[in-house]
Image (cartoon, rainbow, N blue to C red; front, side, top):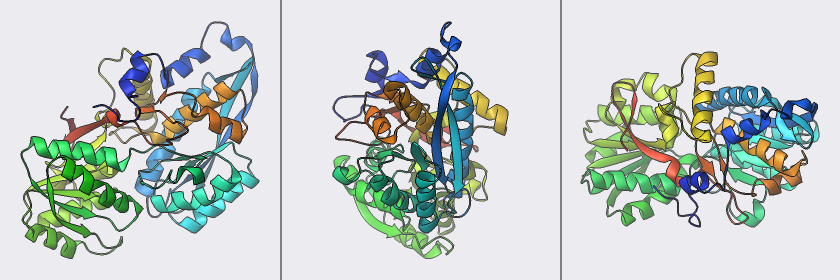
Length: 400
C-alpha cells in the first residue's frame, strides 16, 4: 500500500536512504569509537497518559512500550555532539480526564522543564494537552488517531500525531470490503473524538470504494448498554458493519451486535488492536472480525534484514521478556522516543523549539512504521504501515 503524502512511502524512505530507522539510531550509538565520550546530560520527556479511567486499556500499554523503548535507547545512549544523551521519563496519570491532563501538562512544562510531552491516548485528553503545549512551545507527540489533532496547522505547530490517520484506515477498510464483494455498509461509532474521526472519514472512503452506507449509529456514552444501537444496525439491510471504537468498547459493541442477531461481516479500526480484544470477556464474539491495523500487530518478523526490522524484533523480544507476552498493540510510545532521540541527535540540543524543527528533518522509521513530518503535515503514521487482519482462534491473522 502506498501513501499519498507527496509520494513519500515507508518503502521509499527505507530503500532510498532518506529515513533514519530506529535500528540505525541505535547502531550509530554503538560504533567502536563512540563510547569513548561520556554522557553529556539528559533528555527529559513528559508522559501524560491514561493509566486509569477512560482510555487506560491503551494508556497502560503505551507506558510499557515507553519503558521498554527508554531502556533500549539508554543501553547505549544518544549520539550528542562529542558525548551521550540519556532519556529520563516523567510519567503522570491523567485518569482519562481532560482537566487532569491539562494540569499535568502545565506541571511538566513549568516544573519539570521537559523537552517534549508524549501522551493523549484519547482525543479528549490530547486536546487538553494541546491547549497547554502549543502556547508553551513544547512539542507534543500525540498517540491517538483523532482527525483534528494537527489542524489547523498554523495553530498546531508543536503538535505531531503518531496514530494512523482515520482517512488512511477507512481507505484500507473500503478496499477490503470491496474484495469480499460486499456493497451495503452500516457504521457503529463511539460518541467521542475517536468515533468522530471515523464518522468523518468513512463516507468519502466508502464512496471511493463503491459502497453505500445504509445507516450510521453512535454508541451511547461509556457505561451504558449498547443493545438499542446494535439492534438498529442488526435491523438494517446491510452486508457489513464497521465498528469504529477503541478497546474495550469495540469488542463490547461487536458482542452487542451478535446478541442482536447480526451474523454478517464486522470490520474494526485500529482502536481495537489491544490485548483486551482477544482476551477480554467478549473474545468469543470477535471470532471472524476484520481489523485494520499497523502490521506490527502480527508480532516480530520471522526474517529481519533491514535496520527497522531488526529494531522491531529486538523491541518485541525485550517486551516479552519484561511483560510476559506481546499480542501486537502498536508501540507508538516507543516510536515517540525514537522521534525525540533523533531530533536531539540532529539538533545537538534539548531545547523544545529546536527539537520541534528537527522532527521535520526527514522521514524517521519507528517500530510501528514510518513518520514523515513536514512543515505542511504533522501526522500521522504513513499509510503503507497498515494491513488487514482477521481474528481467528484468539489470534491476529494477517491477510496481506
